[in-house]
Image (cartoon, rainbow, N blue to C red; front, side, top):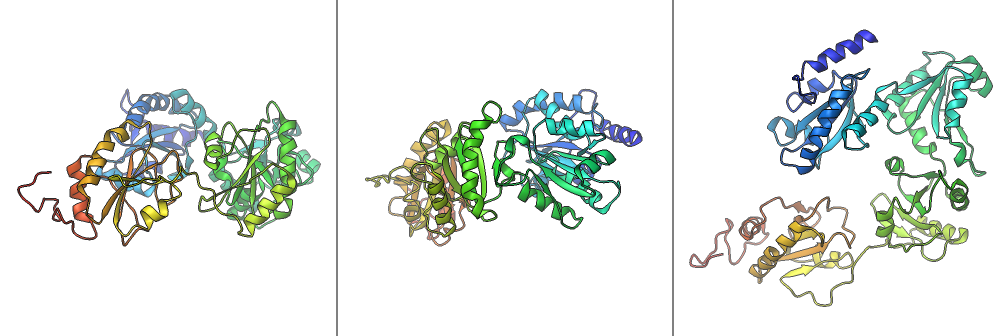
Length: 489
């Protein structure tokens, strides 16, 4: 092992100058990344302000982590360079900077830690050791349980059993998502009466009368089967959903938002959780349940339109990101009816929406969630739509340009639309990750909106629309030149 670590360290160090520790992997990424046991890769754009702010922190962390045993390599890829575009596309990079963790050349997961030097070092050090920690004695086992955290434990008398090998593969791949342990200690195995078994042991604080605290995997020694077992059983009937683990919960997902606090108020937290579990018990396997802090998930609470209160606010989000909210006071009976009505397809999705404007005759039409289908998707004209935020400086600067564009296109088969994306739900086909975001929708292909990436001056919009309009514009030819040569834009 020491020889392997030294070789990896030497390979990593040759890529650095005396003062630079971050490896530039923009060129020959696949060849370079696979030689490192573990690496954190930053996908960036040189013009990105967030990337510039992260760069010195990333460099400082790289200098510390390269000395770790085993060494953790920090690398970056310029997504704007010719050799980096394909790499960034392959790994689904849509914003900058994007940080991904790689193990032996394969993506292990998204980076979920702080973005300062100390945070990066601390987060990556926890990932650099063995993916499954060995329990060597009964005392070790008791210490693990005393932490009161849900864990996965493999009990193996034989170190090279087929199940142990499959378990290790899962631990290597899923270590960011679950805490893995294993033991070969005879006393621990005999005491628990588990031999060649993989067991989910849920934290004591989650103990309840509706389900077992220990769940044993009884499938074939296959890593995919073990992974599916963990996905289904780790959190139980109603799991504790946090910012760190939220991506592990499947859909359709029912979430109860209230004052969830297992550190200061576990009894009060479980008071509500047990009632939710009672209502969901008969629907196990049909819907996933979770409890989440109302404060930490304030944006989701706002998306559902819930008011403040002590009792849980209940919402369901399905695979298509449609939202359904439980109306009325919280009760087990009301919750049971809400879940049944959802499963029977009797509920309508909740839309976060402003009121439909009474007057919408301006040069730029106003879309809200409730009129989006009619105004945008149902329009018999091409549509240029802007998703904006009221506080966004770039949006304020663009507003008069779009007003002028709307006036310029009067009489054409094109409409200009704007929508406040902070006050309205945006349809799933429109990815709005920054402001302003603009899309072009041809009138005969509304199901295939195209992201507008052109300039933000009036002439830029006119040239784009003249070229892409379904029907040629009356005032402009396809190149964007006015038909009347004497007129000027």
